[in-house]
Length: 257
Image 1 (cartoon, rainbow, N blue to C red):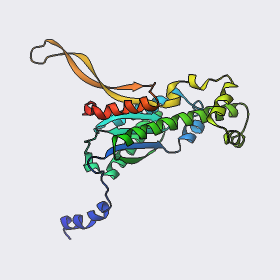
Image 2 (image 1 turned 180 degrees about the vertical axis):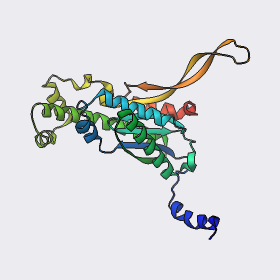
Image 3 (image 1 turned 120 degrees about the horizontal axis):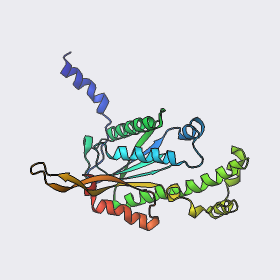
Image 4 (image 1 turned 60 degrees about the vertical axis):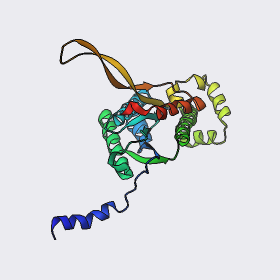
Protein backbone atom coordinates (compact mmCIF):
# COMPACT_ATOMS: atom_id res chain seq x y z
CA UNK A 1 0.00 0.00 0.00
CA UNK A 2 1.38 3.42 -0.95
CA UNK A 3 2.03 5.87 1.83
CA UNK A 4 -0.70 8.34 0.85
CA UNK A 5 -3.32 5.61 0.91
CA UNK A 6 -1.98 4.23 4.20
CA UNK A 7 -1.96 7.72 5.69
CA UNK A 8 -5.56 8.33 4.66
CA UNK A 9 -6.62 4.95 6.05
CA UNK A 10 -4.99 5.41 9.46
CA UNK A 11 -5.46 9.14 9.99
CA UNK A 12 -9.19 8.72 10.56
CA UNK A 13 -8.53 6.70 13.73
CA UNK A 14 -6.56 9.63 15.13
CA UNK A 15 -9.02 12.36 14.22
CA UNK A 16 -12.46 10.72 14.19
CA UNK A 17 -13.33 12.07 17.63
CA UNK A 18 -11.79 15.53 17.28
CA UNK A 19 -13.88 18.16 19.02
CA UNK A 20 -13.62 21.84 18.18
CA UNK A 21 -14.89 24.84 20.13
CA UNK A 22 -17.53 26.54 18.02
CA UNK A 23 -17.01 30.11 16.79
CA UNK A 24 -18.47 32.64 19.19
CA UNK A 25 -18.00 30.38 22.21
CA UNK A 26 -15.52 31.66 24.80
CA UNK A 27 -12.55 29.45 25.66
CA UNK A 28 -11.11 29.15 29.15
CA UNK A 29 -8.45 26.55 29.87
CA UNK A 30 -7.98 25.28 33.42
CA UNK A 31 -4.84 23.42 34.44
CA UNK A 32 -4.30 21.56 37.70
CA UNK A 33 -1.11 20.20 39.19
CA UNK A 34 -1.00 16.42 39.59
CA UNK A 35 -0.07 15.26 43.09
CA UNK A 36 1.05 18.76 44.11
CA UNK A 37 0.15 18.28 47.78
CA UNK A 38 2.73 15.51 48.05
CA UNK A 39 5.19 17.34 45.77
CA UNK A 40 5.12 20.62 47.72
CA UNK A 41 4.44 19.38 51.25
CA UNK A 42 6.31 16.07 51.46
CA UNK A 43 8.96 15.94 48.73
CA UNK A 44 10.11 19.57 48.87
CA UNK A 45 8.57 20.58 52.19
CA UNK A 46 7.53 24.10 51.30
CA UNK A 47 5.89 26.14 54.04
CA UNK A 48 2.27 25.26 54.85
CA UNK A 49 -0.37 26.28 54.01
CA UNK A 50 1.15 28.81 51.58
CA UNK A 51 4.68 29.49 50.44
CA UNK A 52 5.62 32.53 48.38
CA UNK A 53 8.10 30.37 46.47
CA UNK A 54 5.33 28.09 45.20
CA UNK A 55 3.24 31.16 44.37
CA UNK A 56 6.08 32.54 42.27
CA UNK A 57 6.56 29.20 40.49
CA UNK A 58 2.87 29.20 39.56
CA UNK A 59 2.96 32.85 38.46
CA UNK A 60 6.00 32.21 36.25
CA UNK A 61 4.34 29.14 34.74
CA UNK A 62 1.15 31.12 34.04
CA UNK A 63 3.15 33.90 32.39
CA UNK A 64 4.95 31.32 30.27
CA UNK A 65 1.64 29.90 29.01
CA UNK A 66 0.42 33.39 28.11
CA UNK A 67 3.44 33.97 25.90
CA UNK A 68 3.51 30.73 23.88
CA UNK A 69 1.76 31.88 20.73
CA UNK A 70 -1.83 31.73 21.93
CA UNK A 71 -3.85 34.91 22.33
CA UNK A 72 -4.46 34.80 26.06
CA UNK A 73 -6.13 37.89 27.52
CA UNK A 74 -5.94 37.01 31.20
CA UNK A 75 -4.29 34.42 33.39
CA UNK A 76 -5.31 33.50 36.92
CA UNK A 77 -3.62 31.22 39.41
CA UNK A 78 -4.43 30.04 42.90
CA UNK A 79 -3.04 27.08 44.81
CA UNK A 80 -1.94 24.53 42.17
CA UNK A 81 -4.31 25.64 39.40
CA UNK A 82 -4.14 28.01 36.44
CA UNK A 83 -6.99 29.47 34.36
CA UNK A 84 -6.44 31.13 30.99
CA UNK A 85 -8.98 33.33 29.18
CA UNK A 86 -8.47 33.25 25.42
CA UNK A 87 -9.19 36.01 22.95
CA UNK A 88 -12.74 35.51 21.59
CA UNK A 89 -11.32 35.09 18.07
CA UNK A 90 -8.50 32.71 18.95
CA UNK A 91 -8.42 30.05 16.24
CA UNK A 92 -5.13 28.23 16.81
CA UNK A 93 -5.25 24.59 15.64
CA UNK A 94 -8.79 25.10 14.44
CA UNK A 95 -9.88 25.40 18.11
CA UNK A 96 -9.37 21.65 18.55
CA UNK A 97 -9.69 20.81 22.24
CA UNK A 98 -7.24 17.90 22.13
CA UNK A 99 -4.51 20.18 20.75
CA UNK A 100 -5.16 22.92 23.30
CA UNK A 101 -5.29 20.46 26.19
CA UNK A 102 -2.15 18.56 25.25
CA UNK A 103 -0.01 21.59 24.39
CA UNK A 104 -0.96 23.63 27.44
CA UNK A 105 -0.50 20.69 29.82
CA UNK A 106 2.86 19.88 28.25
CA UNK A 107 4.09 23.47 28.36
CA UNK A 108 3.02 23.93 31.98
CA UNK A 109 4.56 20.64 33.07
CA UNK A 110 7.85 21.42 31.35
CA UNK A 111 8.10 24.99 32.64
CA UNK A 112 7.23 24.17 36.25
CA UNK A 113 9.61 21.19 36.25
CA UNK A 114 12.48 23.34 35.00
CA UNK A 115 11.78 26.01 37.61
CA UNK A 116 11.44 23.50 40.46
CA UNK A 117 14.30 21.25 39.39
CA UNK A 118 12.07 18.21 39.75
CA UNK A 119 9.39 16.43 37.74
CA UNK A 120 5.93 18.00 37.90
CA UNK A 121 2.84 17.39 35.80
CA UNK A 122 -0.34 19.30 34.98
CA UNK A 123 -3.57 18.22 33.38
CA UNK A 124 -5.73 20.56 31.33
CA UNK A 125 -9.40 20.85 30.43
CA UNK A 126 -11.12 23.28 28.11
CA UNK A 127 -14.21 25.11 29.39
CA UNK A 128 -16.54 26.22 26.60
CA UNK A 129 -18.52 29.19 27.88
CA UNK A 130 -21.46 30.47 25.81
CA UNK A 131 -21.55 34.09 27.00
CA UNK A 132 -19.59 36.87 28.68
CA UNK A 133 -21.75 36.33 31.75
CA UNK A 134 -20.51 32.75 32.00
CA UNK A 135 -16.92 33.97 31.67
CA UNK A 136 -17.41 36.42 34.53
CA UNK A 137 -19.07 33.75 36.64
CA UNK A 138 -16.27 31.28 35.89
CA UNK A 139 -13.58 33.56 37.30
CA UNK A 140 -15.76 34.61 40.23
CA UNK A 141 -16.21 30.90 40.95
CA UNK A 142 -12.45 30.29 40.99
CA UNK A 143 -11.93 33.37 43.19
CA UNK A 144 -14.51 32.13 45.68
CA UNK A 145 -12.92 28.69 45.59
CA UNK A 146 -9.56 30.27 46.44
CA UNK A 147 -11.15 32.12 49.35
CA UNK A 148 -12.77 28.96 50.72
CA UNK A 149 -9.62 26.88 50.29
CA UNK A 150 -7.46 29.52 51.98
CA UNK A 151 -9.75 29.60 55.01
CA UNK A 152 -9.81 25.81 55.28
CA UNK A 153 -6.07 25.51 54.78
CA UNK A 154 -5.14 28.07 57.41
CA UNK A 155 -7.47 26.43 59.92
CA UNK A 156 -6.23 22.94 59.13
CA UNK A 157 -2.55 23.80 59.42
CA UNK A 158 -3.14 25.79 62.60
CA UNK A 159 -4.55 22.64 64.19
CA UNK A 160 -1.78 20.47 62.77
CA UNK A 161 0.88 22.76 64.22
CA UNK A 162 -0.81 22.33 67.61
CA UNK A 163 -0.22 18.59 67.38
CA UNK A 164 -3.48 17.29 65.93
CA UNK A 165 -3.11 14.53 63.35
CA UNK A 166 -4.70 14.55 59.90
CA UNK A 167 -7.89 12.82 60.98
CA UNK A 168 -8.43 14.96 64.07
CA UNK A 169 -7.81 18.26 62.28
CA UNK A 170 -10.07 17.28 59.39
CA UNK A 171 -12.83 16.15 61.74
CA UNK A 172 -12.63 19.35 63.82
CA UNK A 173 -13.31 21.50 60.75
CA UNK A 174 -15.94 19.33 59.10
CA UNK A 175 -19.07 21.01 60.50
CA UNK A 176 -17.78 24.52 61.13
CA UNK A 177 -19.25 27.46 59.24
CA UNK A 178 -17.02 30.06 57.58
CA UNK A 179 -17.63 32.44 60.50
CA UNK A 180 -16.66 29.76 63.00
CA UNK A 181 -13.47 29.00 61.08
CA UNK A 182 -12.54 32.68 61.15
CA UNK A 183 -13.17 32.68 64.90
CA UNK A 184 -10.92 29.63 65.23
CA UNK A 185 -8.11 31.57 63.56
CA UNK A 186 -8.83 34.73 65.54
CA UNK A 187 -8.48 32.77 68.78
CA UNK A 188 -4.97 31.93 67.57
CA UNK A 189 -4.11 35.52 66.73
CA UNK A 190 -4.83 35.37 63.00
CA UNK A 191 -7.17 37.88 61.33
CA UNK A 192 -8.18 36.06 58.17
CA UNK A 193 -9.05 39.23 56.23
CA UNK A 194 -5.59 40.61 56.97
CA UNK A 195 -3.77 37.69 55.37
CA UNK A 196 -2.11 38.45 52.00
CA UNK A 197 -4.71 38.94 49.27
CA UNK A 198 -2.95 36.48 46.94
CA UNK A 199 -3.56 33.72 49.48
CA UNK A 200 -7.25 34.56 49.86
CA UNK A 201 -8.10 35.46 46.24
CA UNK A 202 -5.32 34.24 43.96
CA UNK A 203 -3.16 36.16 41.49
CA UNK A 204 -4.02 37.69 38.12
CA UNK A 205 -1.81 38.24 35.07
CA UNK A 206 -2.62 40.48 32.12
CA UNK A 207 -0.90 42.35 29.32
CA UNK A 208 0.06 46.01 29.56
CA UNK A 209 1.69 48.40 27.12
CA UNK A 210 4.71 50.47 28.12
CA UNK A 211 7.13 52.89 26.47
CA UNK A 212 10.71 51.76 25.94
CA UNK A 213 13.59 53.94 24.82
CA UNK A 214 14.75 52.93 21.36
CA UNK A 215 16.42 54.32 18.25
CA UNK A 216 14.90 54.78 14.81
CA UNK A 217 16.94 52.40 12.60
CA UNK A 218 16.66 54.79 9.65
CA UNK A 219 17.77 58.00 11.36
CA UNK A 220 19.34 56.90 14.62
CA UNK A 221 17.08 59.36 16.42
CA UNK A 222 15.91 58.45 19.93
CA UNK A 223 12.26 57.41 20.02
CA UNK A 224 9.84 55.84 22.48
CA UNK A 225 8.77 52.41 21.25
CA UNK A 226 5.58 50.73 22.44
CA UNK A 227 6.13 47.29 23.90
CA UNK A 228 3.96 44.92 25.88
CA UNK A 229 4.69 42.95 29.01
CA UNK A 230 2.86 40.85 31.55
CA UNK A 231 1.54 42.64 34.61
CA UNK A 232 1.09 40.61 37.82
CA UNK A 233 -1.68 41.63 40.21
CA UNK A 234 -1.46 40.21 43.74
CA UNK A 235 -4.48 42.18 44.98
CA UNK A 236 -7.49 41.38 42.84
CA UNK A 237 -10.96 42.89 43.28
CA UNK A 238 -13.70 40.66 44.64
CA UNK A 239 -17.27 39.66 43.79
CA UNK A 240 -19.08 42.13 41.47
CA UNK A 241 -15.96 44.27 41.11
CA UNK A 242 -14.03 41.21 39.98
CA UNK A 243 -16.74 40.42 37.44
CA UNK A 244 -16.39 43.94 36.02
CA UNK A 245 -12.61 43.49 35.98
CA UNK A 246 -12.97 40.33 33.89
CA UNK A 247 -15.46 42.03 31.57
CA UNK A 248 -12.85 44.69 30.79
CA UNK A 249 -10.73 42.08 29.01
CA UNK A 250 -13.67 41.05 26.84
CA UNK A 251 -14.55 44.66 26.03
CA UNK A 252 -11.03 45.55 24.87
CA UNK A 253 -9.24 42.32 23.93
CA UNK A 254 -6.45 43.91 21.86
CA UNK A 255 -3.82 43.30 24.53
CA UNK A 256 -3.13 39.71 23.47
CA UNK A 257 -2.98 40.29 19.72
